Length: 84
Length: 190
Image 1 (cartoon, each protein chain N blue to C red):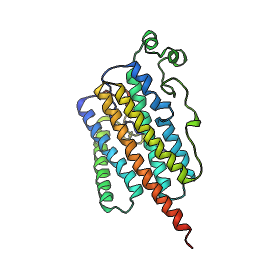
Image 2: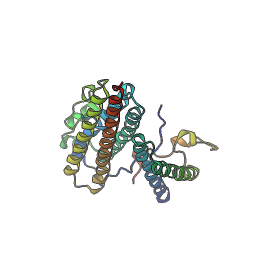
Image 3: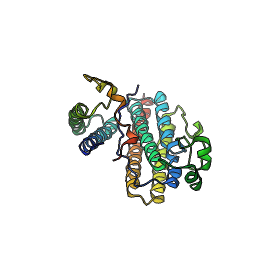
């Protein structure tokens, strides 16, 4: 995997992790307005980055495989094959 | 349902292949306090949880444990990549090689297969959440012992990420326990 792709993947991983951590916090603090706002901002930023990533490098989800001449889902390396 | 996203939760890295370490680390795949036990325990307990908070916390932590299972699998895969039968034998993995070649399997550090007796569902949220909190502490301790067993800084880094997640999960289960106990106490006031 090229360096640019790997760096963007790591950014997505970091944002998704932040979202998961807010998700668990909000499960037990569902009225925390600041956490709700931070969660929304994190998810928005993550979704924007995922759109750029999948356009440039291929699908993260099978449903990202749109407007492609081929089924790229099976071409990109699997998570355990990536050298970080 | 679940949707698979083609990425790990954390960039799992190892510095070098290390069969001995793979043999120890596999316990977090299929051992008593491992990620499979955690995921199956919480996802199964969801159905008898009484409140919105407790259903969500079992569902969402159980789902995160599936991502951790994949991180452990990736680490073991990388630690054992291209190992020969002779190398496996030297690392005390000859028995594993006989049964599985280099394939992953749900076993503990001494090769015992995963069993449902590692987990419980009591149907009582207070009992189940106490089990969940104990499970998180046992997993946290296991990660600490695994960190002590390796000198690979990359592996230590990923194991430390997982160790800290156990602390966060313990905290969230504890909050869920307090809320469910408040909920139960409020029901008894007529």
